[in-house]
Length: 159
Image (cartoon, rainbow, N blue to C red; front, side, top):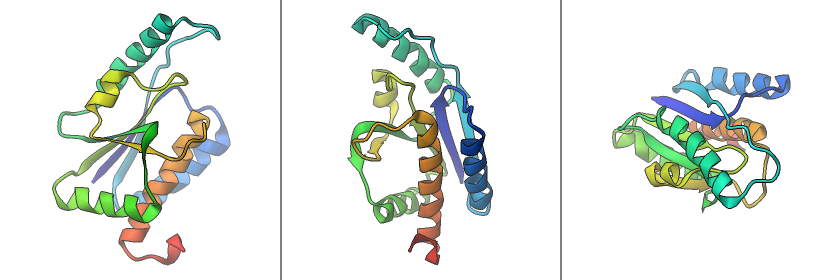
């Protein structure tokens, strides 16, 4: 199984890098795990709607270039479907059972994901209505993917 997190921008904080590296190490017995960063588009504080859409479109194109045709894609979106950890684990298990060995998770930039990326996604997932820093979301997502594997093997980690 191959798990990719495709995200906009670079991870700068050492403590986030360390946390993600720890979950990547733990996941290595279940899947090949990688984070793919695409460059973010420079955007000043005040943008018109057209300029915001242009930024999302450019970042979206970079994201789409990293997704293969057969990849199953989760787009992280505030309006996506919320799942419990158990539901998420069952979904991952079902995907692998039915031949989806390449699963991508997409985290957009500060303005969100382009309509093209949302259209390409097989599903949208939300971690709640809170707005979280994109760098923190990478760590939270990494932990939840690891948790899903642990739930699926019956480990007490989940408790």
